[in-house]
Image (tube, rainbow, N blue to C red; front, top):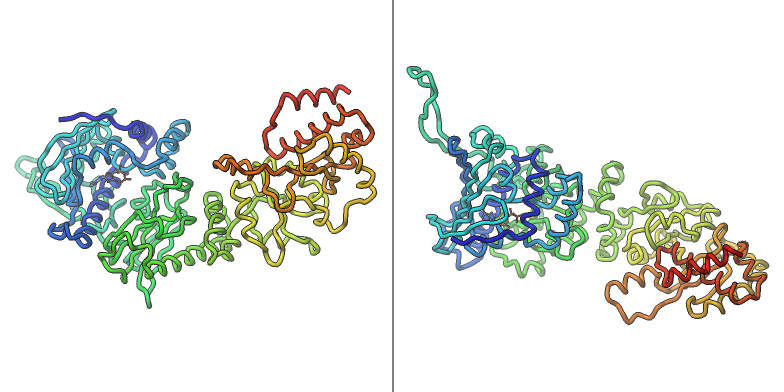
Length: 620
Ligand code: ADP
């Protein structure tokens, strides 16, 4: 017998499960049964697709039994099984990357949101909510030896050789005080019906039948009985008319390991040149790994009800990676190899039809159910925006689906709504980028637009700067960043020639003082209250973009300088015109440039110097 320590993440997860899911303990059975179902799926696939497994008899079943005196509950399957190494890998570590960060964040969150942890998928370890010891005996299909894994869920586990007649896995829970209630026929039946009715394999429950003994005046054991508890039909194959909202929701929870109902589901059967069924779900909360490169895809591929893979990132485009559900094709060969899936034409067609279907469902929600759409946007606006630059075939639809913040509204706005509010002579759709929403809403760049009653989109998402330019035009109107020079063209008139001429010497002096710190100093036509603002030249990347690229490791990028625009009506600027004192001009120049950077959410190169100059000016 050898003892091993759990990986830190497992300990963290166990701790969280026990402290945050206690109000929903019964889901442990759903999790363990769904592992059995996955194990059966995997073996089924191998027996049809892999020569080496063809000799293995596939007799799929999940057997549940209990002992109400010993307080044990056992779940056994005839699935793929695990060998010694797999037991260690699967039940001692969590291989999913990002787990550690996610769990630490969750542990810090005092609300201990059980929904959040539900999103993560608690899996096997949830058994420790109801058991103070769990024993797993498993034998991998095609191997002779069986192994026993045992743990009390307190930091370590043990592995030793064991015996098992056939391949598969048997999980025995030694129930704790609170879990004892589950060693009972009625509650097991109830939980299985509720959570696992649509597991595609039969779940059998063994129990003792009792009868009333008249002479002894008590119920006595009559004999053992085994009964199938679940419907065992692939839910997605059943007609929509037979299914209730609840059926859909429960099925969702088993495949997505979520504890909440989904935000929406979409069940489609295609007949014609291609025959397939899809059942898609969108989770209420974005999956925790949504922004990780190695996110876990959530759509499973079946062929004629045989599970093929749940690990194919090409099944759906990556911007729809939050989708959960099933694609079941009638046309693909059963032994389709996972490797060639990507080039498969049938699958490509199913995929593009599915994407269209999902997007058109979103369109109709956007039109008909504002509240639901807002909930959707709150979680998934950003992935949709990714679609704008990755899915050209659906760009027109996506442009209408994405939402923006704006100076014109407090909530989200679509481009269509924005353009409905546009003044007749407005030349373009305007947006501002750089920094967070609060910063942007207070930006001096907005002053003249506000004054002229022009609405500006607040593009505070870091990918906006990449995404929005790819939209090109919206209904013949250019989409223009107001962080660029040339704002005077936006308001119809040229800037006040007289003021410009009047202040030209001030601009010259500042330019001389700032040297190559700026690309140019210009008289602004867009400022009313602020003394200055920073803009970028027409085709230059923004400061934030430069910062982002640098952070991503692009070191040899030439630094592109901003243009300092100054307000000809501001006192500080007038002072520059009036004085010839180089020290004062330098102070004002640095203070203007510094505040321009601060407003953009950038860091100052030399904050101490900035403060010194500022104080000097204030003192005068
Ligand atoms: P998840 O199911 O989300 O991957 P779990 O913690 O529930 O997470 O399970 C971890 C892994 O252990 C599974 O991915 C699977 O590889 C393995 N496993 C669990 N139960 C079984 C089982 N009954 N048969 C075979 N493998 C299993």
